[in-house]
Image (cartoon, rainbow, N blue to C red; front, top):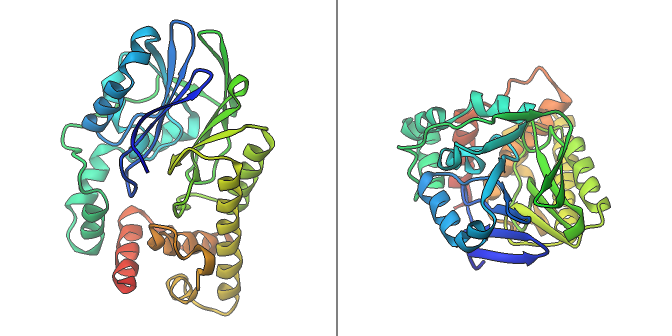
Length: 308
């Protein structure tokens, strides 16, 4: 997809990375009269500065007064330090995750020996986290928060837990736009860090019911609710296939290797299937241990090796 600043109309803007893959996320800007709201920073300082430079003409006439972080994955907030003097907004569960897994924890993952570190370094190559310092939210909200950005009504809704423990969508009703964060992966394999999947499916339904014409995903091109429905189809498929194999007594990794993704097999980042199957297994049996970050990356690394 073409990267850079895209004006999607009615005061809404998007910054898209030049390429996809792990860590390459989107950012949004809601431009009102004399001020704007930034939706997510990026994975490192350099990427965030590049994004802001691409939108400098907009920011010059409507300075960024507030930032909202849609969820706690680093590729959506590690660049906060560039705007640490602004109001930073997040849902309570998102802020909790940001403090639990920050730059130090990701740097530790990248430094690990073995499969986990090797896969993480391959996934996040091209990013420099060495100078990232956490800049945490200064304003927290629960469930919903209504804002006015230079005359534009903007609604924040925490639809999580889904992708993560807290997932905020940013709805601009007058523009018919929703910035969906990682509630939507467009043309990319989603990953279920938290779940439950049923709640993520409800979040997809909510987005489809907003009546918007434009959906800005956390990853992938600017799209419509058609992409939301396609992602929901993938999630339902994994849920059904994993449940059937759990009932047969397969382990989660055996199940992931046994599932034929069929029409979903062309999605990039197929290795995320193993984490998604584990999420279904934990819903079915809460006694199954959580798949913590290093273990998840090790499982995906091994799965990816077998795909090659």
